[in-house]
Amino acid sequence: MWLCFDLVDGGYITPEQGMQLLRQQMCCKTPIGQLAVECEMMSMGQVFDVLAQQFRSSLPFGELAIELGYLNREQLGGLILRQLDSVPTLMDLVISSGFMTEQELEDAIEHRKRTRMGAPQEQQFELLEVG
Image (cartoon, rainbow, N blue to C red; front, side, top):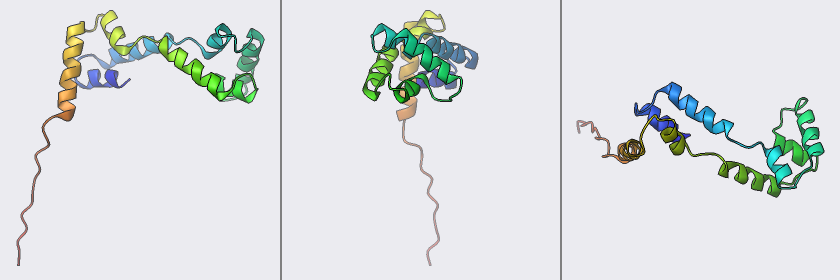
């Protein structure tokens, strides 16, 4: 997500393009319930039970699944890691969307790194009269 902010702040992409990229990335996430079924950690009936309970609760799917005893924290952690692995990187999305070429993106990232680490800010000293 920080890459997106850097590209917008640097003027490389518009805020609208940044939002489009973040939406694309979010849409690519496989739901935890689907992953739990694919990994045989939960049945479809259990997934539907959690989804039904979400209407009455503000808890996310994984937390409810733990509360209901369908998953433990370790299993949820593994599912979240698996979910993150399935999401394309923002770099890939910037390039595939045609907002920047790979070289333009690499140059922009390098420029932003230099800007962040850049030369130390000039320090202003105030002379005080003694005595």
